[in-house]
Image (cartoon, rainbow, N blue to C red; front, side):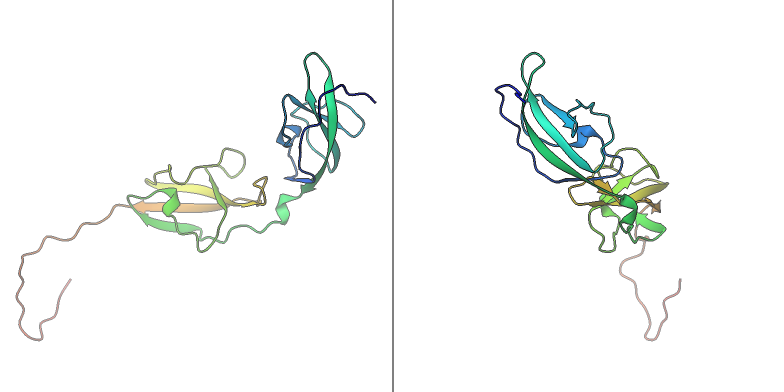
Length: 180
C-alpha cells in the first residue's frame, strides 16, 4: 500500500499504559501524528486503548498520511500495584507545604485533593493550613500508572508555639525542681 512520500515517525515500542489510557496518550516523534488501529482505521484521540498493535503516521498537507510505524500497546491493571504505606493522620507544624509531609521512605508519591480523578498537586506549591484530607498514590514506570485506590491522609496543622517569656537570668537553689 502506498502511503505517500512522508517518512515514518519515530516511536518506542512497546508502550506501557494503565487501563483507561486513550489514543492521545500514545507517543511518537513527528509532525501531525495520526494513529491507526491494526485494521487501518483512523483513530480519534479519545478512543480507549486496548492491548495490541497501533500504527503512527505523519500527516502531510491535505489528507495524505506517510509511512507508518508500528507500536505495540501493553496495558496494566493499576489495581495490582501496592498502595503507599502512610499513617491515616499526620500532625504538622506551620509553616509547611505538602512537600514537608513525612513519607516514611515512600518515593514517587503523587498527591490529589480527590479520591478519584482530578489533577496531580505540586507538593512544593501547596501550603498546609487547617485540617485537610489529601489523597496519595504511587506513580509507576513512565508515570502512566498510579496505584489504586488512593490512600486518604488527614493532615492536621498547628501553629508553632513560641518560647515562653522568662526572666533572664533565673536563679535556683541547689536541689530545686522545675515545675510546669
